[in-house]
Image (cartoon, rainbow, N blue to C red; front, top):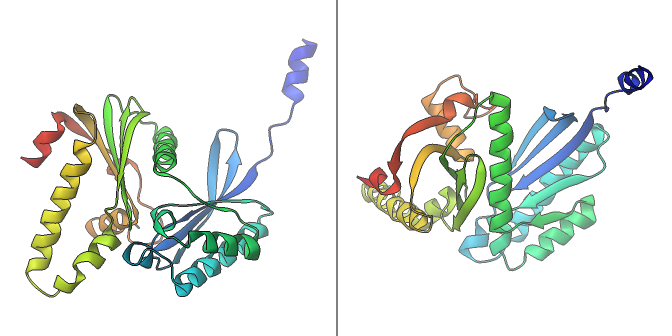
Length: 266
């Protein structure tokens, strides 16, 4: 009886505020959240537009691009400190992976804001996407049984992961992104050839990516990315997907009839 009373008297852990940053090709996004037990509550959803397309056009970042990222971190760090957060977890993906002078930007962010900006590799990027999906599904009370094809379409690259019963089993990454694609074919944007060229190139890229995955039947498809959210907002007026509040997750996750990957192209 005394032991039971002792256990009941232990106070619940106090909510802990945290800040995480995703430094992408066209935006620096940050979430400030409050961790409570196994759950969390979003306190701030911050987004700062940047332009790091020179990373995959010229292979290096311009001074202007770096200045934009450093300025974005100034706003993020200020917001984090207002919640008493001293340490910010920040990662970067394809734009920094491909830039030969990425170390200059990393050093500037560290010196100016005392934040370690880590350029993560493809495997870690896929792992984080899978973990985010697991948490999202848990919040929705949903489970994806069987094989799930998870596509994150970014500005500079695309990551495709294959999950089985919610566990990551394989992933591939390709230099295919919305901004990269636009930069490659923007000279055609005022002609009728633009949409046809982009469509054919996208189909070829999809085939190449899927050919690198284990062959099998897919039960579910999940697609994420900033441009995907904006597209959803255009298709679903009032959803908030084109800006502001994020769309509800449930209607974005739809089961597919089990089929071979090759059948998608028929």
